[in-house]
Amino acid sequence: MQYQMGHEHASTTGIYQFVSDDFRNSTLRAALDRTMDEVLGVQIRGQW
Image (cartoon, rainbow, N blue to C red; front, side, top):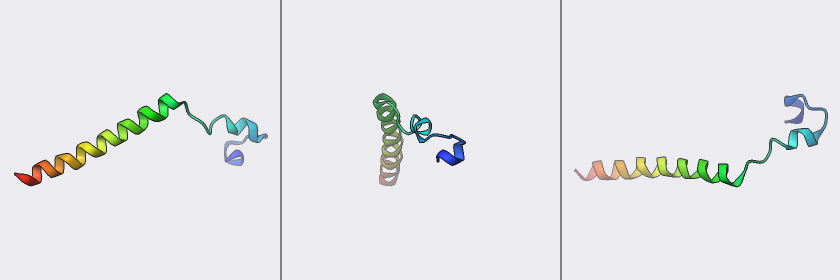
């Protein structure tokens, strides 16, 4: 990745490897909510 981004030092590339806990949690929560909505929506429609 260091080469692809054109960084001379790995430490410069390293700053892009981590995201905050809040960002990670909110992104994961949104993905899980979408998935559950899709699954439950299919199950509910399938019962009618």
